[in-house]
Length: 458
Image (cartoon, rainbow, N blue to C red):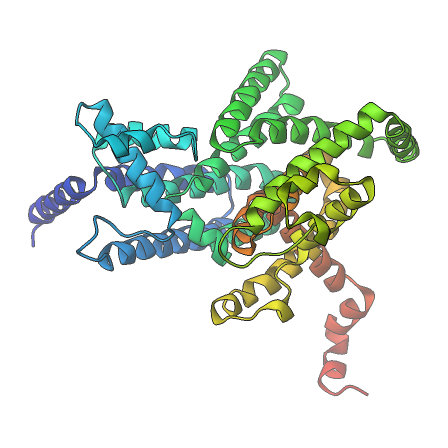
């Protein structure tokens, strides 16, 4: 075929594909500029490694979405990876139809404006589908792009601070950890949430790092706006943003001043203990714990595999949560944090479906064990970025831990902390590997004079 015929064939193929799914073609067109930005400033070796990670991640996601399309039952409008996706696809279809004047049934109208599950993610999907027509599979491709773009944003923040190896390692964790991979191609709101989180983290760093005060003001405005967007996507987003940035800034300030840090280690616990002697503070803290306990109780009474955090006397009747004592509240918080880190324990697995998750659970244990190593080493190297990663990750982890109760939901929501912890875990692995390779024993063993000794140890 001549170049002209190839061009005509490509144009026809692109036109057919655009007709079938305009959103998919638009998203695919945005991948090239995203790649160019991701690879800018890298040396040849880093660029090759990132290219391999980048394109394998794209290929696997597009293959999975294509498989979903091809496996769809002809008796249903479209297929889904998760049952919850049906809620978003149907509801945004009804909202779009109303917006463009297509009538819907009274029952659909009722569910369209139901407060249950209300989130700004619905508006995003509705506006997009009003522009490009219904896209039950294009939404999956869009979310894959949002997730990939968020990973690239964080990669660009982490690489100058922690090095190329840790940055590529962290990106690989986020892109290929099975549970994160699955919801990165879902029609759920997590990819959009992750994308806004990455922008907020970039704005937080700009507040402390920008050389001009005008840029810092603009970054602060962007951060607050991003916090409200997060809040509209998922409850607690604004609090997470403010706590993460203020706490991260404070931690970075202390880490760079050892004497002040030592004083804070003594003063802060004493001040907290003194504050808790006041009845008003005790009541406020107890009410916050009770609110989390109510959410846990609700999760425990959902279908699926659940786990307990409260004392047994509090489960028969939800109203008894109001009678929680300080001791019961403390045990609830401790159990919540422990369960967040360990559930599901390998010996608790009883079904084949849960057994399939066991390899990832082992990876989770390794990653969470590496986080403290990466955090300690990272605080010495780049206090601000690591502090922001730590405080954001700790805040979202605590929120998820205290409200959890369903194992499947915990696994899905635990992924919300990985955009922060993945980079620390990767840097922890790099730190350990560097320490081992630079140890005197390894250095002597790898020296030319000791090669014979390695072959024939005495």
